Image (tube, rainbow, N blue to C red; front, top):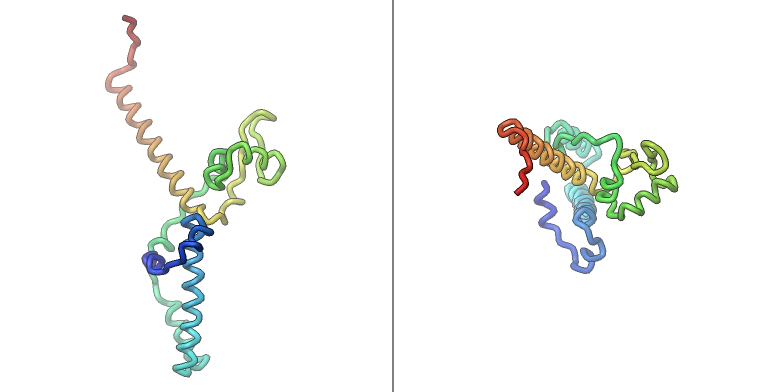
Length: 168
């Protein structure tokens, strides 16, 4: 199913206006939806299908187990809170602006240990962002990478022991 989007083309000027992959993909999906609805109406009218015919076809289609890997993939676990860095990556805002939004109440958030501490920003408010799944995937990959580095460091530490500094 994702390959269908590769078949849809938008004018270059439109792609420049949309400016991100997720917005371009959404525009292509909306164009496809319009085209499919128009085609559905044409088929129903030309073939003179009755409401009963349409309902029968819909019931059959609803029983099908469609396998679209990108649509049916396991949901990534979303953290309860995000850091300023996370929100900055997700929204494209610089960290200082994210902190200002936290302080002004634009984002549901709180500071962990007082006025000069880090912010904990509730993740629920960002789940509707178009790049939310991509953000979670990248975050998961970063976490996996950090885990591999930590395991290698522990292995090096246990195999050779602490490395002593030498002065020459």
